[in-house]
Image 1 (tube, rainbow, N blue to C red):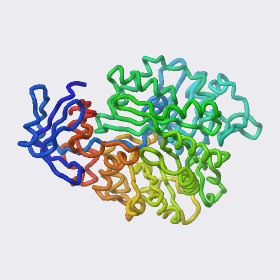
Image 2: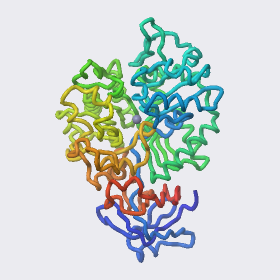
Image 3: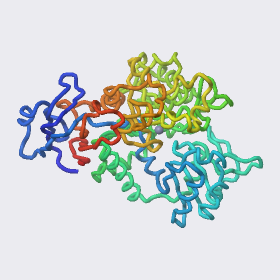
Image 4: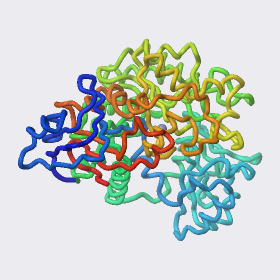
Length: 529
Ligand SMILES: [Zn+2]
């Protein structure tokens, strides 16, 4: 990256700043915008060291932030074979067989439907991996399938009790099938998978961040983190390879000990140039597809009935302690029961010192809780691409199967939430879904697969407008974390995304193919295409 002083002239600029919504030029110095206006005004701010960019044909918007993404965890778990597009067991087996590694076979982004007939069993992949230890991670990050050799290396021989809802799935004889549900169970096999060296890990992180810049992202709300991750982020910034502005959270598992909580509480103010700590993440439920979400009324087979935390009181107590220590809270809540649990905890804890408490996913929402977001000043954070598949009635949907009747009409209520006056930030949840914000924006507006006009949108009345969608990636994420990005105005950070056409005016079906011309983060050009 080079040159912290720059200017763009002759562009079409949407500032999202109410005082001056449109402009043709802007300039920045030392990473901060110093002029936004017409070409003549901005030229006065151009000095001899300024890199001047010809903005003709560029549609400039404030830099896009992904409000829910796992750039580090995602990088670690997307090592190895990509199974995202393998929808049949034969395809899964073919890809595992083709993997040349003689040691561990690692695979990621697997889809449940490929195992619809076989079930999640080590036997299903036994021939494909042979004696090699293998582990397949599913796309949602909540399930792994380990091979027989991997189970043996991890000394997994039967069921165990965990402090949280996690499970080593066993057959009628008590032998592990290979399926491991939720982190506490998956960690047993993760512990024996060979680790990257620090240099390999940082290189892999840096390459993920560059890929995010290429699709126009300048910022990220990271969703999983530990005190150790802060060291990696610091190291990346020192290497000049932290190319996204980010908040990095502390993620608390239910089994966390009090001394570990104390160690984390003092980290609220940790920060670098482009990153800071100060957010605390909790998972209050799992996912509908595997029956681990928490619904107010459980699913038809009694699934999705429980919170992820054995004690919701303990979760609420930690929310309060982290809030008092200067953190804002982030809670994963897919089911309407979990959403209510998070709102209750936030109401009791009071607002954070900076930014907003927030609820992630909100895939189902009870009417009674809809107005509470705006009333309590709690932000909503949703991922439009999680509706993927709901526009095709021919596809089997474990998402719908896990719902009791009537709830289908209460899914992904983005329109209701936005018109309730709540802050609605948008994101991808990569590695769970594609990180490309152009695809996310298209889904937010269409609620069906972009480019497939014959598909039936899922609850089309809940679609967001083009402007609401752009705000979901710019002004709204800034409000959520309490920083001054998300608009283009003198004195604010020079975080800028430029497309080949205005994403607000473009048809949403064409958004995924809209070229990204320029990504500027803190005044540094992170991508030019
Ligand atoms: Zn997530």
